[in-house]
Image 1: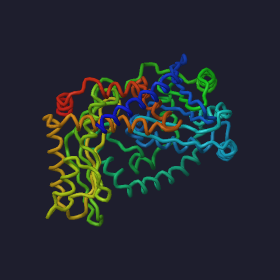
Image 2: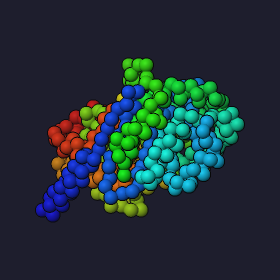
Image 3: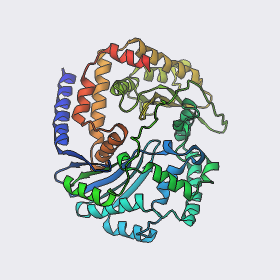
Image 4: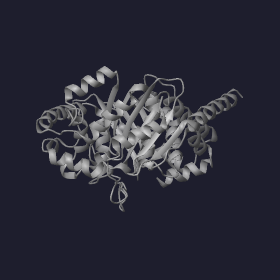
Length: 431
């Protein structure tokens, strides 16, 4: 009874919060295809404003892989209107916080600022994206910085494992390339490569200007027209993979390093895209598999019990595991990442994971497991949307990757609708 009451209370809270979010959300599309989206947050004097671009490392030319990430570095090194020093001083004087990142499918620049400085921050973002100087000296300086960053990433074993996973799962394809690019190509990227990437991918219909917080939508539209209205529209409507969907390869790669005390492993099956009908079904399946940490415990899922007790004399066979879903425009990965001490029999946990996947595929799951996973999924969504930056990220990611934004209320409806254990089993077996 307590669980049921608690669940109903959570649903009422989610519905109330999401209804308010939905009513404050507005979108407009400029003649050049640029989407302008805003969400008003009453009671705040700050805002997050940013540009989300449907172009990341996946859009790199294979011969200059790493260009998208290289551009992110160079954007802050001076524009045709602002030197690097003036740019840094202006942002500091405004008290704004500016950030950028590159993923496999997106490039993002955003600032958090006082509402009265919103227009100046949009001006800065436009300058960074459309008027970067790309000076040869700055290119050479940043080349060394990026190579150092590559060295640092090589020490982040979770990043390395997932890069290898993408390389084997999407062998010879754009999704299989790393975001930073291979060192040998980082050393050769030049000004022409950078300019070509911008002219090819920075198109109005592949970009969204997002403002969340103390934001007037009509004024944000005016800013979009003023600062981004000169961007051209794609000659042909953009499709991430064209007519050829990515091919998933069920293969294996092992990297042996006997100096490491811990083994890092990522397993995956083919997952679903952002806009797939079964996206939320896969997310619930992911929640049923769950996560576990030897130091924290706390989970009683079948896989957690196996991880904690299947070693010699009932000892743990892993340090931790995490079920994950990674989605892209036209495909995805669904799997489990785990770590284990050197010398452990990894096949024990691999077999346990495959057994858990088999249980899902056969539908040997309970309604309670499904309901618990659904509740965790909805709660995690609401909890992450706790400030203007997180909401802007949610809006921007959805708009550039799917072309639309599902409000939290709409997400909850999709999570709750048409749910049967058989549906989950059929979807997981298909993947």
